[in-house]
Image (cartoon, rainbow over all chains, first blue to last red; front, side, top):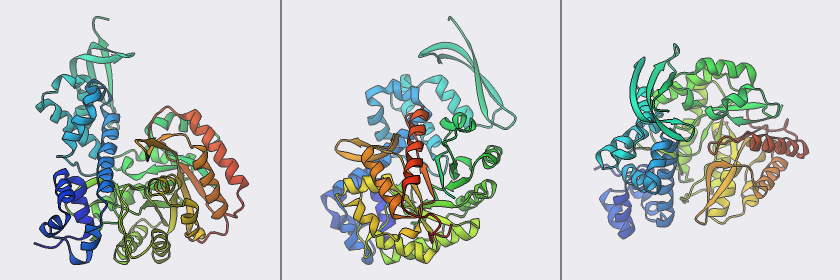
Length: 176
Length: 274
């Protein structure tokens, strides 16, 4: 196994909560197991555990913030569980590339669907998100929760794309 | 020439389009234009001096730069025709994993070589001067250089300038208990070309860069300290949360303008290659 340099080892520690727990318990064992390149071993073993944990949580919190901007109503519905659910999801999933926040939001909704929180998902918001990353020109949905003022209403949600590809929506509200 | 402005964000687009007199320039985030928006960029180029700021080139990752990301970054630079371009002294990904946000690199001779090579490559590929930004981090890494030595050598060897994020300096100095003024004075002042600033957030006993607050007075004092120390050419307010905030931004821009006017340094004497 090729020994790891510090950046790669640090990335693993920041992304993997179980590896961090192992490091907290026995840093020498983790350094041996990875293994760490001799030149970086001292720096690796001198990592401050508390600071490492805070940095790792900051990464998750920054992702949570970005996802919260994309699916605010779903987050609002999750209420006080939003953070804990997101942490559970985020520790196992790392999106890549410059669209990572949208990918994160999409994957988080998938996570909620398969982990018993389907009712928390705002359907109109999810439709908007899916439509945005698709290539489709037009689609419509009957939804129970399109926002009017501060309330979700039943509506027919029309999603379309302008000539320059920008997604747009309009709605016919029902039972107003 | 001195420029004071804001980071361009979707939530601020309408306000910026109204050409508020306090906004003298814009910093755009390259990744926001990777998938289009070049027409919008052309419009902004006509209205404002622009700077292109990158988040994802991960200059601190050993090995070759991701060429696909660099190509996209260069295409945005081509469209924006910025005064200069900027990135971070950090890594966001390793060979195995994309962490998506900025993480510290050890201030070592070996890491310095990686950063210098990558900075030169980005600057040459884009045909623009690159300036590099200090990050905020909860995790401090030791190396064979101090952080300020590292930044001075990096600027010298890569021929780049420094984008001093004053908020990041303030936050790091509070969380890691060091003297921000002394740290500042260890930097070569002529390299400091641009500042980033936004109010800090205090949560659970630690300072954070949530980019969600107006500039607090103690932070503003540090900004003034920097403006008196270095021939800064531009200041950008980086607001990313708690919109709408145009009243707060307007007030902060006015304060910065006054501080710039009152500063003792001559901004024509910097050796930052911008």
